[in-house]
Image 1: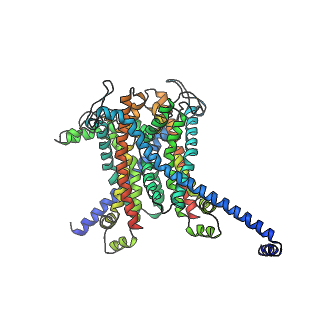
Image 2: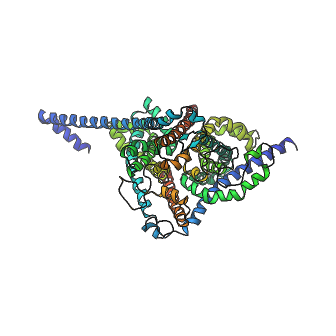
Image 3: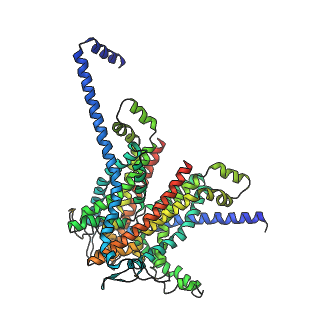
Length: 279
Length: 338
């Protein structure tokens, strides 16, 4: 075999491998979604959305964890988004060249990938121990701590994309910076910032680890955030590891609901950011 | 507009002094309010940015405070002891630390080549119209919550491995001198290997998307020049793309590693939760995060809880170092490109 053939052969091997690797990655996505649909869809019924979590062996639904998850997610976004947008605003507008910005950006990027179970331990220490009991508030704060870095990052990135000529012309009219930001920067970056919030929602709606020691779980329906409250991920965790067939079935249904909610959110976010870029 | 404006100016000019001074005063007032609003907003945003730093220091302080009882009781031994006995209240972190490092290592061993190959496919081989859809599909793997990987791993992937890959590994390597220890014991399904493979799938999208981004940042002229002298795709990747993108790829790999080290729920489902160190990667084990997730709510007594928080502190320190190194590498790259 001469050099030319050997080079072509190696190239062909690598090409085949990379096509194979891509097929493997895509295949895995299909496989996971497929088994979720296969296991979850057959048991999906209206009762899932109208009944409470059952005791072992009985019929029931997932109403209390669904309501709990919605409440926790909403609160976490309500707490985390303003903080995240403000911090991102400082980094992109006021303190673009400040030392503080460099440090915050670095720390924020680390928080973005920090293990979420550590956040759970942190909130346990600062909220659950002083309060003396598990609470929905603790869960919401834990999730908010995960929301903040996501929103900070996207807000800063999106504001940085706003052309500086827009700001300059607004400033030239005599507007103070706060109003330039509000009436020019935010409007120009709106789609991107909303994308960031959507991604944050997607990120926290499946988070389990931070809720284990904060919101815990509750087998009854409650909207009281001062006590333990059920959430879909924690119920999935508990039910999937149980030996009862009906609990495992409900865990699959819960998994199906979360996955498709999360995928819908991230696809919407992508579509939104794509439309924002082209306009 | 202009006319009426002129008229107003003219009117003001023609009328008495009183009117102009009122207009001037109200204008100063308005500017005063605007400047006050600006200052308030500025300080609020600054405070929010500082809050990010406070959160991080708060996490570190809370973890250190929570783990003090355990660290005082066991000292340095906590890091190197394997025992984990809630009954006698003797705790050591070696087994979870070992499990965390080994699962992440095997995961990277699988995910890095796969991620790089996918990135090569996406940047060099894939037809243009397919690039975006495939890229998004791979990134969707990152969007799936980790608990979903857990339940899928436990009910679908572990039984599959138990009946196919694991017996095959035992068959192949069972009689090879050194490797046989790695694949010793019955195929449980769950265990170190299963957890590692699940982790590999989970970090794959991170490695892929960062590698793709840095591959795309390679100037087209460099690649075109190499293709122009007759290089094959592989030779272009090997001698032009990878040397150019090396720092970025390492950054991406370390970012994936940071994720793998801290991953909790998926691992908790499939690792088997056994507090021991065994040479075999088919055996059940445990990781730091899985231990915390499994035992924290059942932990009785200050020392037990405190030991688990100390585990959390160790995990945080390890991931912090890895992630910080990853960010510094990527930062250096950004500076070079920008």
